[in-house]
Figure 1 (cartoon, rainbow, N blue to C red):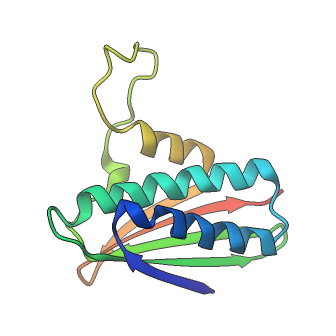
Figure 2: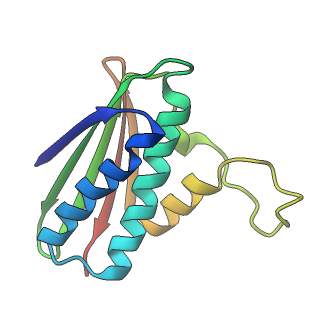
Figure 3: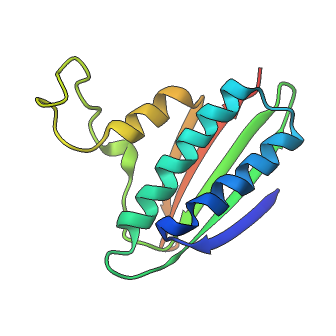
Length: 136
């Protein structure tokens, strides 16, 4: 398991993406799976950076793990920010036009659709969000 810790600031997104891309390269990840994982990682990290700590700056730890055959890529995000389970948010009605839809929620909806599994728990004052993608 590889770990990367960074302050939860938008300016650090490029480093987070580089960390994940580097790990995916080690596992001969297809371009399509790599794109899907990168989209999900970006969505989750940006949400943590924007909302987890309010006006303060905190940290986020990102753990990358792989196991099994086929490979199951697991990426875990841990922050000490405000307790928030994005999976409880109602999915947006994508049949509505952009003007008719409520703002927010589309990114986590997309993440749930492109990942094979996504889990959230709040434990010991920490938000823990885990995304999984099976490489086929």
